[in-house]
Length: 451
Ligand code: SF4
Ligand code: SF4
Image 1 (cartoon, helix red, strand yellow):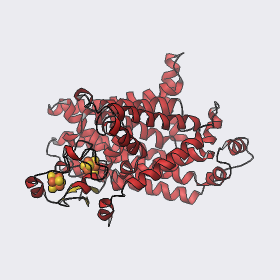
Image 2 (tube, rainbow, N blue to C red):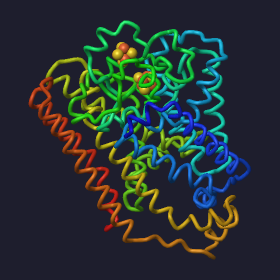
Image 3 (cartoon, helix red, strand yellow):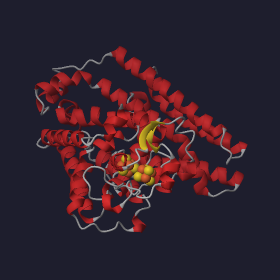
Image 4 (tube, rainbow, N blue to C red):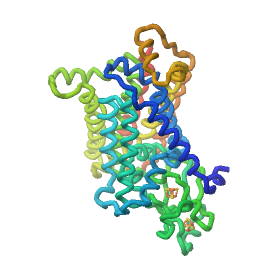
């Protein structure tokens, strides 16, 4: 049924126009609403309708769909639509080879999580969120105007890369049905230059050759090649054991860098959901901040640098370094492996937080729908005139589901680790312990709730 939809000339265009309208409405709903008060912002993020939708439902749903269904969000993304239109009229310069490594995306992601989200709170202040969305669209237009093909999606968009990594777990992906047909295919319409400008049935603008796709990281599921192929040889299909069959050597170092930031980011997201685990997590950055008495560094920036950058890098490097001492292969070999084995736990941890967010924000809908700007009710909640009561049974169900997801993720990693022929037994034990350690860290959040 879905493959019929993917062959349709209206897919994904119609959906992209719809998401573009939603994108514009959400941006305008957030544009004029702001505050400098951090406590007020904590309420405003949930009472402003745009902010509530973007950060507590839209973004969490994108994460969840990537893990279970692959990069379908990318095919519906309004930024891809606009950048695709812009690139038709742009300069079409080839993207420089030395910038294709992937480090731009990792650095951009580090900047967004450390500076934009953690330090400036673009997820809490609606006006900053609008500025962020508009900046992202503006950058996409600029890049697409200068460079050929889908340069923004391929070399700049951190959301796409994040979803690409998580979709390594998804049991669906775009593949060719029969490799032999591709071998004898003369015209290769799916990558033919003459189809570059077609509106429907374009050749791949992500520089992929469908016959060579073996994992979900880079294909944005735009389905243009599905429409272009005259032999009806491409489809989105069920993939048996996607993570088990993925070769971890294929991870690039920039992707390892991205996973490293995610290690810190996801632990922060989970552990700060409960007071006790939050106080334990923040004790180290707070102590270091006091110790060095930084005057010109914002405390939140310092906190994010320690938690999202320095600690995860130390964590990965020390594990890979120890494995290298034991077995002697290159450091990058072990970095890719340990980052890969941690990926399912990170992804399921992120999914856990996404579910927590979506359910804990249900009580805010009535206020956000009544006064979408959110200032009135944020004030009422802050002054105690309105109290927000959570559904404890839903929260309990989500916590149990999240913990189950984390257990399954560890089983995934352990199964793959067991069959890893590239590692000696002592290193398998070390990597198994490291994955268990990270899993236990995430689990400490909900368990500490009883302390
Ligand atoms: S995917 Fe289709 S168009 Fe592309 S090489 Fe294979 S048969 Fe030819
Ligand atoms: S391989 Fe096909 S579906 Fe994937 S990005 Fe390229 S054209 Fe789109």
